[in-house]
Image (cartoon, rainbow, N blue to C red; front, side, top):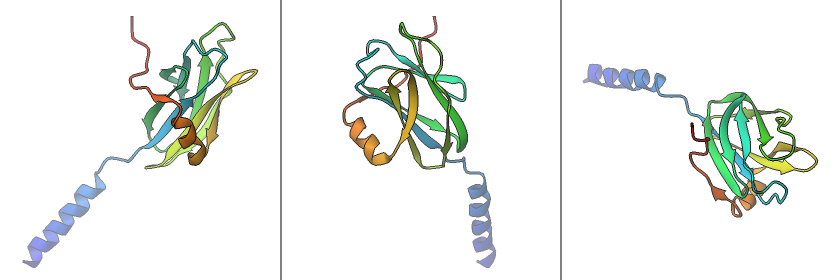
Length: 134
C-alpha cells in the first residue's frame, strides 16, 4: 500500500516536471485610424512577420515567456520603414496589450488591460492574418 502510494506520488512529480511550458499572449490592436485605413499593417515579433493587421481589427499571438521585440510597418503609400522596435517582457499566463499608433509615424505602444478592453469592444478579431503565399 505504501509502495503504491509512493509510486503514484513519484509518477505525478515526474510527469509534472515534463509538462509543456505555459505561454503568454500578445494582443495587437489597431483601432480607428483614419490615415491609411485601407491598408494592412505588417506586425513583427522578433523580426518575424506574424500578421497583416487591417484597420479596426486585433490579433492574438501565443508567445514563449521572456523578452521580445515587436514592430509594425505601414504597407501603404507612406514610408515602408519598420517602426522603432518596442521591447516587451512576456510572462507565462499573462497578456501584453499593444496598440498601433498612427501619427507622424506609426509605432506600437503598450497599454494597460482596462484601456485595451475598451478598445477591444470597437474592433474585430482576426484569425490567420498571415499573408497568403503565392
